[in-house]
Length: 125
Image (cartoon, one colour):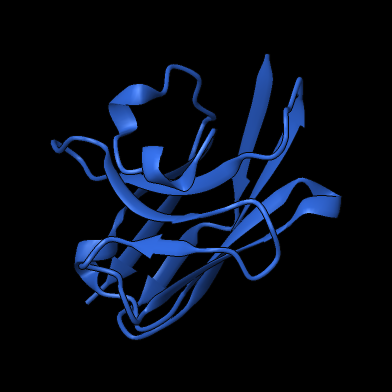
């Protein structure tokens, strides 16, 4: 079983920045893509960003975060990151990470059964 531990969330004012981390442990298999997702109260979990396995690999972003968020990873540390800049109140949500076989599979949160506890991001106006 793969364990996913998200951290780095918090309360920030609109326009501020946060950097989230996702540590992966357990029975991990590489190469694998990594992705970030979020779920706001009363809404379904949605895709945020994804990155392929290798250095300089392909990235993918939801239109709502493109140009503001940057996904990256450190394979030596089995950790993925999400740098979030120019945060908006509508970015408020619990943020989760997950891994998949290919970046092309990461846009559908319903594909994944194993989730971590997530990390809360709250953006005040």
